[in-house]
Every structure is written in structure tokens, then in C-alpha cells.
Length: 350
Image 1 (cartoon, rainbow, N blue to C red):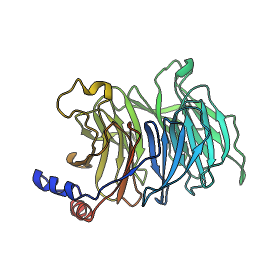
Image 2: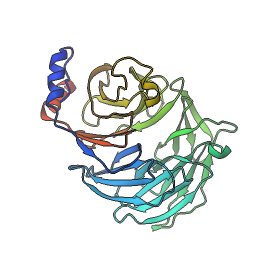
Image 3: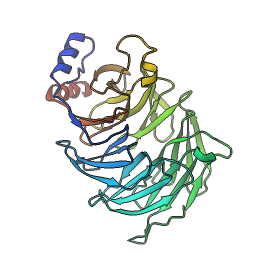
Image 4: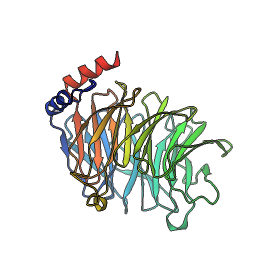
């Protein structure tokens, strides 16, 4: 477990020592780019630079099957609410939709550049996909219509495309907002923009960090967003409506991923120093732990070690009692949190 008490380093260490051993999920040959639970929490989906997406059981970590077809690194994925459709976006300049149960590819959309983010709308009738600036392309968020009435009939021509004229800053995450009336895009330069889907105009623009914004992730109820910054060595908690920065969790290393617990007042953050830079810093150096922070008081609570490369993605089970992390070394670690951690965290929530 992880200590939820202030102070008492030995107590924290003792709880960490009692944490059940994580399940090491091996199946990818290259770095993990994203891990994600489905809505029910019984499945985990993973994307990797090995061009394969994988489905796993979330209780045992058993690999169920793979989604094969991409010709380049898969950078992003999303799963619809009924776990019937899996969307993937890759460096082969395609977005692909798969039958989540059978692994059969149902359709693909071609883009002009590598795809960095995909996300189903509320209701799953639309899909956004964000391309980057490779091959001289304009970083753009596309919106695709997936249904004609009740029939699944994806249109390969985007309904709209959202871009900042002349900007070369890459989109790292796209999220639906305001009951599909808005889209939030995060850029690696450290800026977040909110777009009106109907007009295609920017309605809000906020600088979240100075450089290298890596990802955004909603809280379960979509009232908060946590942003991870590789350049500023921190994660930031935002109000999802106003995009106002509410809290900052300052780390000692680049942060690639962050997630908000649906059960406790906690934020999990992960990252680490890239392999080529580890030799330049002192000590054990890499800092590949997943850290737990108290969400309101911005206090560091403890960490979970295990990865031996930077953590690229974190997701928390919908019930808040387990989490999964994927890292640069190609492994996924599944942690079922123990009773000591759950009890102490419950006390902190009161």
C-alpha cells in the first residue's frame, strides 16, 4: 500500500513493502504509448510503437488478443462506451476502427500525417482524430461522423477540421467537451484551446505550462482535467469548464502522464528521465516511479516503483481500486491496491 498519512517515512516505506506484487503484462516489443480501461473496467487496451494494439483482462493481466493491421507506431487509442468499437491512430497516417470483440478491422480513415489522439464523442456517434506536423502537414483535429441514423456507416470525409493557421505546434490530446458542443485540444507548446464544434472558432485559450505538454485526462465525472508536462516537471489540475489551473503537483523529473482517482482525493503521475539523459544526472537517476499526490493539499504521499523506462501512460480502474501503467521499456504493470492502502486513503477522504 501507499501511505496516506503525513510524515512518518518508515510507515510509508512499510506500507509500500506490503503492496501486492504487480502483474507484469508482457506482449509488446516496443514502447507503450497508451493504456486504457473500458467503461466497465473488465478490460484494458494498450497501444505500442510495435504497431499492434492489445486487449487484456484487467483482473489477471491475461492477454486476450491483438488488433493487427497498422504499418507504423500506434500513438493513441480509445474504446467506446459499450466496448464494441476500438479506435486507433498511428504514424502510418491512418485512423482505424476495429470490432473490439473479434479484432476485425471495420474501416480506416487516411490523414496526411501521424495521428496523435483519437476520442469518441459522448454517445459514440462521432470520432475526433488529431494529426501532427510531420511531412509538412498542418496540425489539425478532424471530426468524423460514424453513423447514418442507427446504422454504422462511417464517412471517410471529415465533417470539420480545426487548426490554427500557420501553427506548427503538435496536438498531443483532443477531448470532447460541453456535451459534444466543444472540443479541447492540447498542444506540445503548453497551450490548451477550446473550439466551438459548430463554428470551428476558438472560444478559449489558456497557457498551462511553458513547454512540452504531454497529455490531458478527464476525471471520471468530467469536471476536472489533469495535464502532464514533460518540460515543466509537473502535473496540473484544471477546471474542465473554465480551464482554470486549480492545483500544481511539482515533480523532480519530466512528467508524461497523470490520472485522477475516481475513489479518493488523489492524483497519480508518472514519467522519468529519457535513457539518453540518465547518465547526465546523479544517483539512481531514472525516476520511473508512479507517484501518488493528495489532490487538494498538493502533498506527495508515496510512490510505486517497478518500471525501468519512463512511464508514458497511466489509467485508473473505474472503481479506483487498481491502476495500470505503460512505459518506454515495453512493459505494462497492473497494480491491484491492497486493503491497507484503501483503508488509509478512505480515512484521508473523510
